Image 1 (spheres, rainbow, N blue to C red):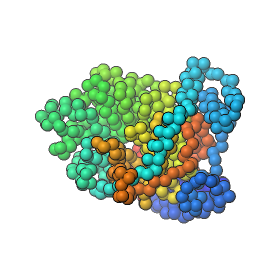
Image 2: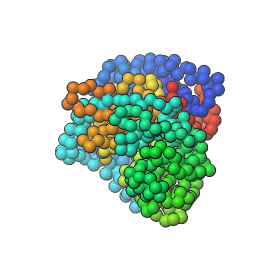
Image 3: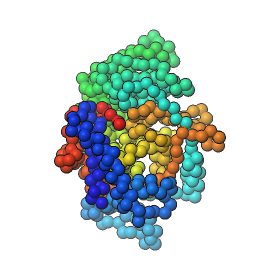
Image 4: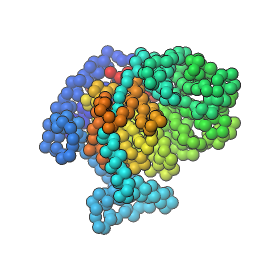
Length: 532
């Protein structure tokens, strides 16, 4: 077991080295050992998983043994668990055991009102499904087990694709090669190449159509014109008119822009995050700065809006929730902030946190084998398994049409897939992959008039996913498979030593003397991805 954990740790350190902007000769030597370490890890996993074969796991036996988790994470000691976590775990275990007498809840009560809210959230998470709901879920799962997608590669970027958005029949992508490209989806062709940034493009967003009309009118352009916002490491936000293919406005932020979104309340605001942890708001009417807050201790790696709320997440694992007060000055008021100590999402130096909000819940991806679920009003944390091994990495999380999609990358063998869950219960449906699938760093989605899914994924490759009729004769390009290790429901957040500490130690100390690497660039490393 010890050697397996050490190999997994070394592979994770090598992946962290690969996202650096430049490598020393010693680091290149370490990276060259990746194939050797993966081979040794596969051999050990095959030996250890042989006598522990679990009935019901589908697929080729040898491959499944190699991928199966070697050992289960130890349960948290009761004295180290928060009251809310104890309640969640007690209820979950009592239901799993189907005991006639439910397990007694712990007597500790620290703050009756706060724990009451936590208990309510726990009860909601464990709500039993009605027969009708179970039948509906079974039908949905069966339909996804027959899902077919046609994949089309959009070839044109010279470096990693860091961000994607979809507008009508267009896909817009941003890359570390400093360009923003516009793609026509029906023909899978490059329509425009928007050059102008002098640094890596790190983020994109599309303002709602009514705000595009206002800007188009002020610029004497067609009221059908659509605009795209791009943020870059060159400290600028550029506003592009898609039809004319030109930059119509540019905002200098004085900080490398690492995340942005559009807040549509009131007159509309552009909200940006910087590599130093700053959150800023800019007026859509005047493009002047309305607010600047030192919100996070590390780089802001994601910002998403949901109605009047704005959610920001940073590399150290902190999550802030803001309310748009629609005022000309200081439009954002912070409602709550949860640090990395609570979320457990600190990915170490150069790490990246991705989030997707849904009501009072925020889904978090942070480069580990789990998706985290934060109830941001109460601070209750849950964990959703997104990989059957602790060697898995989750880089992005996305919601579309009642589905939760989490990217999944196996550090041990380099396999990549997308895991699909149903909302709001977060029940596992299926996994989608294809031969030589690259690591997925970003994802966007939309649906056709007939309700079929269209997705676009970015990373080393930019790929459009087109859903095909399941009853048709045409064969899809993706492989649909079930990973029974993901069938477990949401778990209370007790945390494990492996999950919470290994990567932080790697990032701070570089692991043991054999595998550590320096972290040039600190928190700004994450947008400099180099996937091999």
